[in-house]
Amino acid sequence: MNSVPWTPEHVATVRRAPLSKQRGGYNCDDVDRYLQHVVALMRARREVPSAPLSGLRRSPLKQGYSPAAVEALFGHIADWQSELAAPKRAPAEAMAAAVPQRPYWTPQQLDWVRESNFRPARGKRGYAEDEVDSFLDRVLIAMTKGEELPDIDSVRFYPPRAGRAGYEALAVDKFLDDLKRLRPILR
Image (cartoon, rainbow, N blue to C red; front, side, top):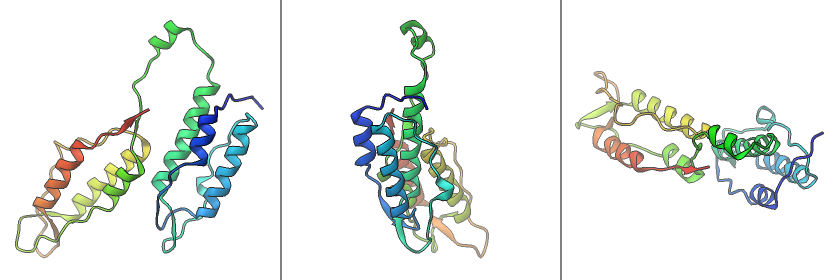
Protein backbone atom coordinates (compact mmCIF):
# COMPACT_ATOMS: atom_id res chain seq x y z
CA MET A 1 0.00 0.00 0.00
CA ASN A 2 1.07 3.53 -0.73
CA SER A 3 1.96 5.88 2.07
CA VAL A 4 -0.39 8.87 2.30
CA PRO A 5 0.96 12.01 4.02
CA TRP A 6 -2.06 12.63 6.28
CA THR A 7 -1.71 15.71 8.48
CA PRO A 8 -2.78 16.11 12.12
CA GLU A 9 -5.47 18.51 10.81
CA HIS A 10 -7.00 15.72 8.71
CA VAL A 11 -7.08 13.42 11.73
CA ALA A 12 -8.55 16.12 13.98
CA THR A 13 -11.22 16.99 11.41
CA VAL A 14 -12.38 13.38 11.19
CA ARG A 15 -12.24 12.84 14.97
CA ARG A 16 -14.24 16.00 15.70
CA ALA A 17 -16.60 15.94 12.72
CA PRO A 18 -19.81 17.79 13.70
CA LEU A 19 -22.30 15.21 12.48
CA SER A 20 -25.85 16.33 13.11
CA LYS A 21 -28.49 13.82 14.06
CA GLN A 22 -31.94 13.30 12.61
CA ARG A 23 -34.67 10.75 12.53
CA GLY A 24 -33.95 8.15 9.88
CA GLY A 25 -30.21 8.78 9.73
CA TYR A 26 -27.26 6.41 9.54
CA ASN A 27 -26.71 4.19 12.59
CA CYS A 28 -24.37 6.17 14.89
CA ASP A 29 -22.41 3.10 16.04
CA ASP A 30 -21.71 2.04 12.43
CA VAL A 31 -20.49 5.51 11.44
CA ASP A 32 -18.42 5.97 14.62
CA ARG A 33 -16.77 2.54 14.13
CA TYR A 34 -15.86 3.40 10.52
CA LEU A 35 -14.51 6.84 11.51
CA GLN A 36 -12.33 5.24 14.23
CA HIS A 37 -10.96 2.92 11.55
CA VAL A 38 -10.29 5.93 9.27
CA VAL A 39 -8.42 7.75 12.06
CA ALA A 40 -6.28 4.66 12.73
CA LEU A 41 -5.43 4.37 9.01
CA MET A 42 -4.60 8.09 8.81
CA ARG A 43 -2.28 7.87 11.81
CA ALA A 44 -0.57 4.88 10.17
CA ARG A 45 -0.26 6.97 6.95
CA ARG A 46 -2.21 4.37 4.98
CA GLU A 47 -4.85 4.70 2.30
CA VAL A 48 -8.45 4.94 3.44
CA PRO A 49 -10.83 2.58 1.61
CA SER A 50 -13.99 3.96 0.02
CA ALA A 51 -16.78 4.66 2.46
CA PRO A 52 -19.15 1.70 2.82
CA LEU A 53 -22.37 3.70 2.48
CA SER A 54 -24.30 0.67 1.30
CA GLY A 55 -23.12 -1.24 4.37
CA LEU A 56 -24.20 1.39 6.90
CA ARG A 57 -27.53 0.69 8.53
CA ARG A 58 -30.34 3.25 8.44
CA SER A 59 -33.58 3.18 10.35
CA PRO A 60 -36.57 5.25 9.26
CA LEU A 61 -37.76 5.59 12.86
CA LYS A 62 -34.64 5.81 15.01
CA GLN A 63 -32.37 8.78 15.37
CA GLY A 64 -29.04 8.62 13.60
CA TYR A 65 -26.44 10.77 11.88
CA SER A 66 -27.74 12.93 9.05
CA PRO A 67 -27.09 11.13 5.73
CA ALA A 68 -26.10 14.40 4.06
CA ALA A 69 -23.52 15.21 6.76
CA VAL A 70 -22.05 11.68 6.74
CA GLU A 71 -21.85 11.54 2.95
CA ALA A 72 -20.25 15.01 2.83
CA LEU A 73 -17.59 13.96 5.37
CA PHE A 74 -16.87 10.73 3.47
CA GLY A 75 -16.61 12.77 0.26
CA HIS A 76 -14.10 15.13 1.87
CA ILE A 77 -11.97 12.22 3.05
CA ALA A 78 -11.91 10.79 -0.48
CA ASP A 79 -11.06 14.23 -1.94
CA TRP A 80 -8.22 14.75 0.55
CA GLN A 81 -6.79 11.33 -0.23
CA SER A 82 -6.86 11.93 -3.99
CA GLU A 83 -5.18 15.33 -3.50
CA LEU A 84 -2.48 13.85 -1.26
CA ALA A 85 -1.88 10.87 -3.52
CA ALA A 86 -1.70 12.95 -6.72
CA PRO A 87 1.81 13.48 -8.05
CA LYS A 88 3.21 16.89 -7.23
CA ARG A 89 3.23 19.24 -10.19
CA ALA A 90 5.46 22.13 -11.01
CA PRO A 91 3.92 25.49 -10.01
CA ALA A 92 3.30 26.46 -13.66
CA GLU A 93 1.48 23.19 -14.33
CA ALA A 94 -0.52 23.59 -11.15
CA MET A 95 -1.66 27.06 -12.20
CA ALA A 96 -2.63 25.79 -15.66
CA ALA A 97 -4.59 22.93 -14.19
CA ALA A 98 -6.33 25.07 -11.56
CA VAL A 99 -9.97 24.20 -11.24
CA PRO A 100 -12.67 26.16 -9.49
CA GLN A 101 -13.21 25.22 -5.88
CA ARG A 102 -16.07 22.92 -4.96
CA PRO A 103 -18.76 24.42 -2.78
CA TYR A 104 -19.25 22.84 0.62
CA TRP A 105 -22.70 23.17 2.11
CA THR A 106 -22.71 22.89 5.90
CA PRO A 107 -24.91 20.41 7.74
CA GLN A 108 -26.86 23.35 9.16
CA GLN A 109 -27.62 24.63 5.65
CA LEU A 110 -28.73 21.17 4.55
CA ASP A 111 -30.93 20.83 7.63
CA TRP A 112 -32.47 24.26 6.98
CA VAL A 113 -33.53 23.21 3.46
CA ARG A 114 -34.61 19.73 4.53
CA GLU A 115 -36.71 21.01 7.44
CA SER A 116 -38.44 23.79 5.52
CA ASN A 117 -42.20 23.63 5.91
CA PHE A 118 -44.82 25.66 4.07
CA ARG A 119 -48.34 26.45 5.16
CA PRO A 120 -51.20 25.09 3.07
CA ALA A 121 -52.68 27.66 0.68
CA ARG A 122 -56.20 27.80 2.06
CA GLY A 123 -58.03 30.40 0.02
CA LYS A 124 -54.75 32.10 -0.93
CA ARG A 125 -52.55 31.94 -3.97
CA GLY A 126 -50.58 28.70 -3.88
CA TYR A 127 -48.09 26.49 -5.68
CA ALA A 128 -48.46 22.80 -6.46
CA GLU A 129 -46.88 20.78 -3.65
CA ASP A 130 -45.26 18.20 -5.93
CA GLU A 131 -43.47 20.89 -7.97
CA VAL A 132 -42.10 22.65 -4.87
CA ASP A 133 -41.06 19.34 -3.28
CA SER A 134 -39.34 18.25 -6.50
CA PHE A 135 -37.36 21.50 -6.62
CA LEU A 136 -36.33 21.10 -2.96
CA ASP A 137 -35.14 17.57 -3.73
CA ARG A 138 -32.96 18.92 -6.57
CA VAL A 139 -31.54 21.57 -4.20
CA LEU A 140 -30.70 18.96 -1.55
CA ILE A 141 -29.06 16.66 -4.09
CA ALA A 142 -26.90 19.52 -5.39
CA MET A 143 -25.92 20.52 -1.85
CA THR A 144 -25.07 16.93 -0.88
CA LYS A 145 -22.90 16.48 -3.98
CA GLY A 146 -21.12 19.79 -3.37
CA GLU A 147 -22.49 21.42 -6.51
CA GLU A 148 -23.98 24.79 -7.28
CA LEU A 149 -27.70 25.13 -6.60
CA PRO A 150 -30.23 24.90 -9.44
CA ASP A 151 -31.09 28.29 -10.94
CA ILE A 152 -33.49 29.84 -8.45
CA ASP A 153 -34.42 32.82 -10.66
CA SER A 154 -35.73 30.63 -13.46
CA VAL A 155 -37.80 28.22 -11.34
CA ARG A 156 -41.55 28.50 -11.93
CA PHE A 157 -44.28 26.84 -9.95
CA TYR A 158 -47.86 26.47 -11.12
CA PRO A 159 -51.06 26.65 -9.07
CA PRO A 160 -52.32 23.30 -7.81
CA ARG A 161 -54.94 21.51 -9.87
CA ALA A 162 -58.52 21.77 -8.70
CA GLY A 163 -59.09 19.66 -5.60
CA ARG A 164 -55.37 19.26 -4.84
CA ALA A 165 -53.39 20.80 -2.00
CA GLY A 166 -50.86 23.53 -2.51
CA TYR A 167 -48.31 25.53 -0.54
CA GLU A 168 -48.84 29.20 0.25
CA ALA A 169 -47.06 31.13 -2.50
CA LEU A 170 -45.76 33.95 -0.27
CA ALA A 171 -44.05 31.48 2.08
CA VAL A 172 -42.42 29.62 -0.83
CA ASP A 173 -41.30 32.91 -2.44
CA LYS A 174 -39.75 34.09 0.86
CA PHE A 175 -37.92 30.74 1.17
CA LEU A 176 -36.56 31.11 -2.39
CA ASP A 177 -35.33 34.64 -1.61
CA ASP A 178 -33.53 33.33 1.49
CA LEU A 179 -32.12 30.41 -0.51
CA LYS A 180 -30.66 32.84 -3.08
CA ARG A 181 -28.68 34.54 -0.32
CA LEU A 182 -27.31 31.24 1.02
CA ARG A 183 -23.59 30.85 0.30
CA PRO A 184 -21.41 27.72 0.54
CA ILE A 185 -17.94 27.43 1.97
CA LEU A 186 -15.48 27.07 -0.90
CA ARG A 187 -12.92 24.31 -0.45
